[in-house]
Amino acid sequence: MGEGSGNLPPGFRFFPSDEELVAHFLYRKAALLPPHPDIIPTVDHHQISDPWTLTGKALQGGNKSWYFFASRCDGESGGASENGYWDAVPAEDQVISSGNRDVGVKKTLHYYAGEGIRTSWVMHEYHLLDGVLGSTSRSRRKRTQPAAVSYNYHELIMYVEMANKWVVCRVHESAAPASLHDEVGGTELSCLDEVFLSLDDLDEALFRSKRLQLES
Image 1: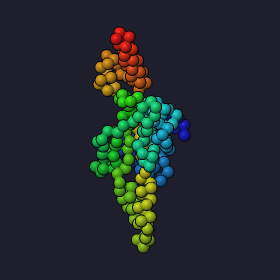
Image 2: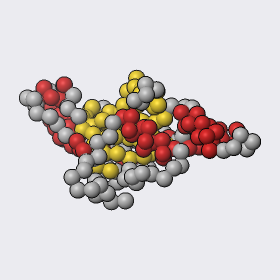
Image 3: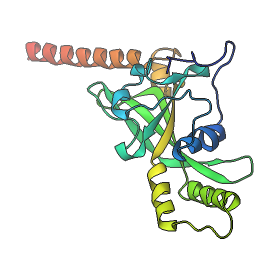
Image 4: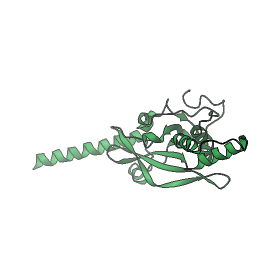
């Protein structure tokens, strides 16, 4: 799979809605159906602990967003590294289809640099609601199989539980937090800028500490 939007026709940008990410792309992934189109890569969440490492691993879509599939079995899609960590917001949002049906859940995570400096990087992690895949699979089996044909319900439930392990993630850089926005006179900061600012603050604190030791 190529980097960025190289798999899209010229002039096209990948910018799906929440419903499209869940009801089309994630559903087909979870249901073990052939992807159409096959443009979102599957990434080990340990490989994207830092957001600036997404280039070349995730699909870069419109509005400077990155997309990838990850396994729920590996935990949250964002891990931790020596540079920072992802932290989830407690509240989750429902993803509602055009038919006014709850089809998924959107979890929001923020990236924190160092030991707790919140940056402008945001990850949205989408997963199917429990039962969505199973109910759709059962209705499909009923439509395609003769009435006399039966199937093992427990095997179907096991298949659903295994297939529903996937999430699809969207990562983007939003406006800087208010505190950081004020510090630089209204200029938005990138993740690396915020890391450098935190290091500058640390150096200044160490300098003041040494100066007080010399004066005492």
